[in-house]
Length: 202
Image 1 (cartoon, rainbow, N blue to C red):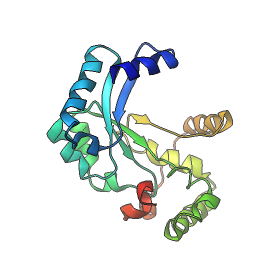
Image 2: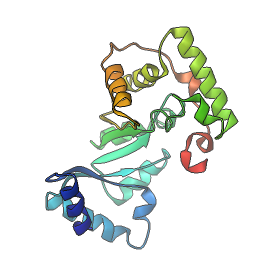
Image 3: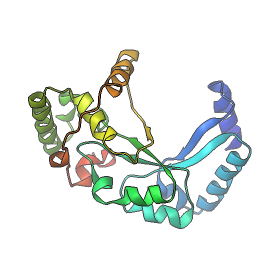
Image 4: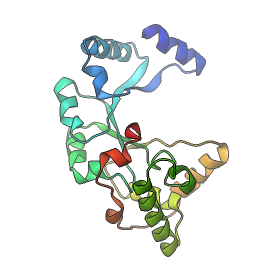
């Protein structure tokens, strides 16, 4: 593991990583889980990374995490269509542990911004995105701005991960994030069905 991390640091011309993230809580539940966690902590002590974190998908997984260790960062999916972590009140638990909250999948893997891509995924999600699209047009706001306004209205968040296909797309996201914040109510867009909003089930 250490050899791999050093190789990646050399590849990216970095002295150390900001964070190394476990992909799934199941990584800690295998027979190698404790050894993996020990080795990650060792990388941190050797200053090859500043933080150790974990990515989770469902709110109930948060309690299971703190039974094993206290991560520096917890990464969660969050978007206008997937507000499960907000509805469950688990964000307060993460914050009380002084753990950094990082969000991802803020555009639902790009499906919120691109109606054409969703048609091959799930018709129910497509209908909700169309509803969101119509609302944005009525409010005269882009879907990109709406997604970022949704996140900016949640004070507990520290980091946001975004995906992009080009420099222009990244510039659009950065410009949108710097716009003057406007408060909207996004409650009606929440899809209370993990099978529809979790890409792993598609």
